[in-house]
Length: 129
Image (tube, rainbow, N blue to C red; front, top):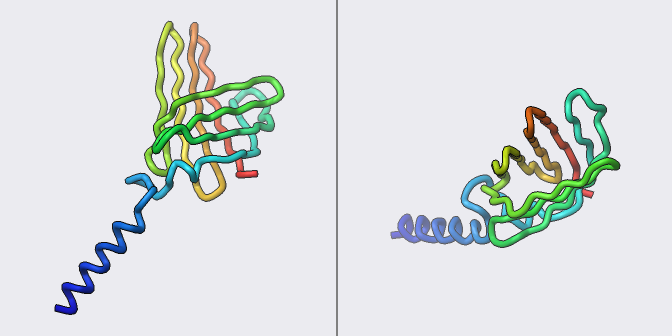
């Protein structure tokens, strides 16, 4: 009887500990929110300083806004899957893929863009400010 009570109690604790956390990866959408500072590296170009702002847009959606001295970019809404996301859009001959992950206070974002035969691949590594 004690074993059944213990297992029942443990199961209830397990379920309640997951409240507000996405199913995979252990990050709630709120974990993503914040301002991040880091660098963006687009291969042949020199890496630049980047400022990233991530805002919650519902229970499992975020928006990502990042800017450098030469560029500003925004993606929204992006569906998160725990501590990761994948965003893919193609319209009018323009393709964009954005994928990323959150590890503690560090966000990693990979961005691929192609249009009219021009392909750009960039990586952002930024730390919560």
